[in-house]
Image (cartoon, rainbow, N blue to C red; front, side, top):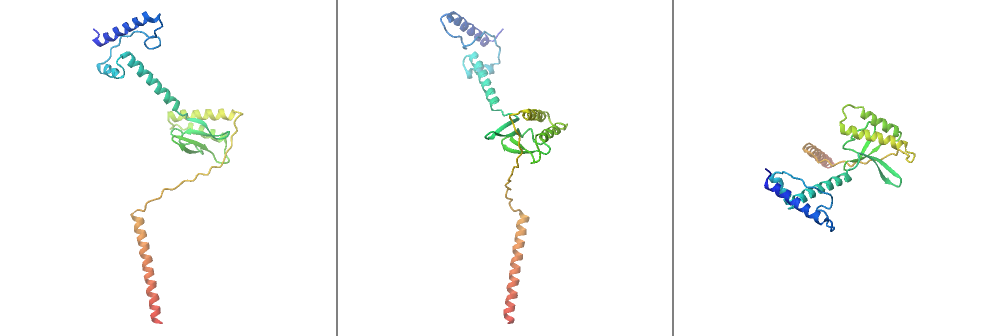
Length: 220
């Protein structure tokens, strides 16, 4: 025997659909504005209460939640950045940018952070695309590389080969100057003690110099 609320929902949906069918000839739209059908659902009481907080009509509550979930998923997909891409930094010039949370190490390649999880690849002045592709292959040959990093490296290798064959792209190696600002270190107890010892030695030296100078004047 079905719970009263299940039967009630079914009867209401049937009545609504019957009413819509009878008025459809006069141009009245369907309940959801798209093709629909009656379903008998058995749900936990707490789920029914939560759905009615979204909409008093159970059918509308389910549709609203599904539509909201689809929109959230689409938004996340649009905001997700690729693991490998060309990012334009000036007119007709781009950098090879990777997800540094996945591609953290490449032999002989500098991975320089940009922002968030983005970083660009830099080579020494005497290296080129073939050296970069070889570095990626060497990293892929490492058996300790995890699955997600391996996928990103495989994507990078494929993209590098595609870009290298593209006659509309030309690659240049530039020297990059990286300036690192060192954090100021607070003096510890040892440093403070050493500074005090140095100050004491200087004071003693001055005192001895003053005594010697005074003794010389008295001797005269």
